Image (cartoon, rainbow, N blue to C red):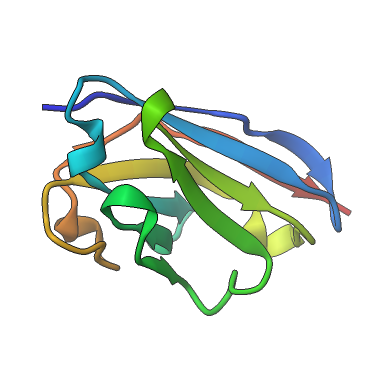
Length: 124
């Protein structure tokens, strides 16, 4: 099993940047693919980005491609989501998720382990 803790959320103006972190427990963290998802009030949880074991492959939702970058540091048991050029519509609770599948998926059902989430609020 793996436990996940997100951090780095906050309030930022449109056009600004944030870096989210997802810290995982256990010596087998590198064996898990990791996904970032987000959920805005009244909306379904949606895929943002995913990364495979050992720093690849990576996947992105079309809405964040070119603005968000996912990366991982297995020595620190951490996956990052660098977000730039933030928009109002990026406001949501951001979750990281993990699974032992071979490649990252785009559906929440592809992941068996979830963190508690971190709030990102983009203001005008």
